[in-house]
Length: 249
Image (cartoon, rainbow, N blue to C red):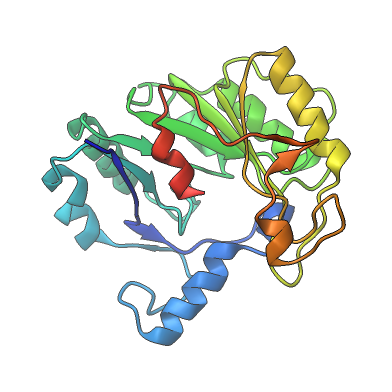
């Protein structure tokens, strides 16, 4: 039986807090959904909690094991999210123990503080965005100090060379360039540095795409489909993180 993957958004909308947010894909998509009159996007990309979605608790009623990307159109630890709403979400994750769930946040300090008393459930993968040194590396440190079992970082868009990084406690590094008309270029040497450090520290690397600009000079959609670094493709995931996760990225 093939495990299914999907997203679930009891929270929608966000606000920009670091360079990775500049060309936010979720904001652009939310604006389209607002224009189309899609329910839940009446306020565009303004941060919103949808109590009806929490109450409906879709994962609890889905018996087929599924990998859920939670709040990919928001940030679970946004400053306007109430602890009570996050509590309800975490409780649902605990109840739906036959599923796996995935978070990605840029509010790593709040996530770390939230899980100080009780560890994140084992079926929840915690992740932070690490796009550069100034904003991303402090998030990595917060993640490493967060009380939880499964952790990963997302270096997409990768905006500079991260230098020497300690990947202790990290099971997966996702990397990639930026797409879209205003995309910023990811240099090949930055990706090569990630490769070397993941291999040295025995951390799994998934390189999603080069974005708008590929090392061979191609741009646009042709560059976006390129997933190789120095001729090698990095498109697999750790065995304990379902291989179908690739469908989420």
